Image (cartoon, rainbow, N blue to C red; front, side, top):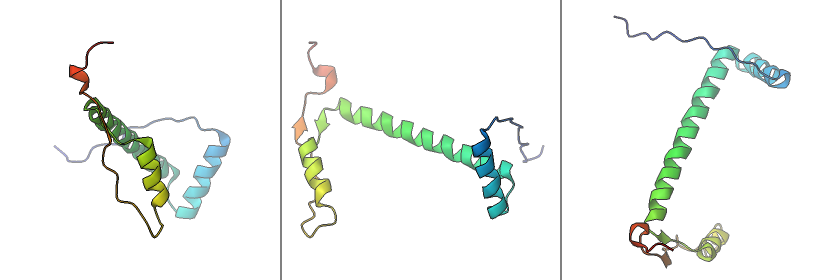
Length: 104
């Protein structure tokens, strides 16, 4: 049995402007357009998977009921790049965990 996995063909319908940009990139980079398209698709899928994982983690953190207020976040971000840059803020909003909160 071979370790080589065969590529599967895929037909795409691209707008003419996108196709022109793809062809231009292929010319400049000396790569086949299919190789560039494959890399773009792989990067997109990886990016979407990472976004979903971050969302799941953020939702789990929110379930714990520990948050940093918008005011503290805004002050911290505003201080970036200044002489008086603030340390990362600590959570200042603590709610009961969602599982133990009474129904409203």
